[in-house]
Length: 582
Image (tube, rainbow, N blue to C red; front, side):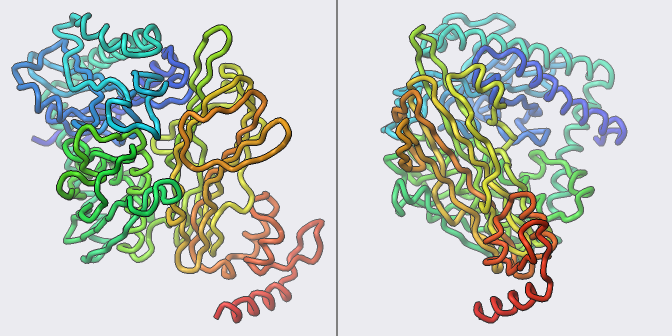
């Protein structure tokens, strides 16, 4: 059955609007500081078969619920809670990410599911917040919750609820925030009932099918038009400066007709370190939902690109093939997984590199922006705070445009405004600025990364998780690579020491300053072919230095005051540099 196209458009907008409205409600209501300020949460609709209906990429999904509970066991008023990453990859964080899912009914018929995902401050584990580089198994990372009913027939199952809450170092805060999730699910159920009352359940179900079909067709056409049949391979090392070169993911992209397959066969054995990333089970859907939106880069027309829907229909165009068990992406339980974010970062980087090769340069070049930074402190009043933040990196350039600067991680979560950070946490932001010369230079340059400096006002424990693989920010076709991430601590005596890209619960004393520099994006094409006026604008804006303008772009200025370009000398300089490179 096809929905009325006008009604289908209204309903698809209404579903997305409900998700956004519920997220706005949550943003104003969380007790957990890092949730309220960092926005690491999401609300997501699924149809009754577990298919995602909107472009939201993060969420556990409901496959593990449908596997464990038969249709007769799923009733109106029920709610399911879970965080077990081996059954279903919950977002990209750690075990402190809890999902609560509620089935939605109309006239006793199951119509859809609504899910709230959020990364809470603590759910046990050897460290406050869960993640640790020292985790030896999954049990070190917090209590494990397989899908169970937290609410049955509108009645809260108090014994299960209390068991989960008491495994947190902040039971009162977790208790209130779990109640908030349940309230939001009830609100979402009421809003969906209003849609059904107005348009009818059959029209809504038909709309679901149309949304999925339209997305599948659009992505199939996008792939068919822009990628020739063939096979491409890449190998990405996971944080080689920290874990060595033996840990890697191998990715093989195969294009046939209108479909792609991504094969992970050849990835290294599961690690003793917490960089394992279980993709079996619902993890296959998760990684497909995460990677599919990058295919939109194949559409060069901005208006056309904005009109393409992204949902599980699009994921039909990307098949995920996994190796046998006991690999980095198919580890056996209870392998440690708390830093799987770093492995996911390498997967995203590798997939984008494969797309660039497969499309003959139609997509953006290298960039890396998945990272975590946290401060944990406990002051004299025994008030604990966990400050979590992500710092914007530069995206890669393309064949016709510069990369974007200060791009936040997937879904745009993580950055906390300076005013909020300084008023609620024991720290001061000394500076936050785009990093000069951090972008990969080229005919089209990459985006700039951000440098941020923190002054600690309490003794704290700092944790950082960033990928240090330089191949993530490679330039292409003569373009230069973007700068890599850097981090350092400066003590009161101004002695500065560098930090590795991955640390866990390292002590940093009151009065010390931490500086984080996010990577820049890779450049595209020969820098000597960049428009000279664009180089001048970059210098005026402080994106690149004058020395780089001359050394890398071959620009000669007549004077240093108004940066007027000497076009004759510039042409001569560029010709000379070109000859030297040959």
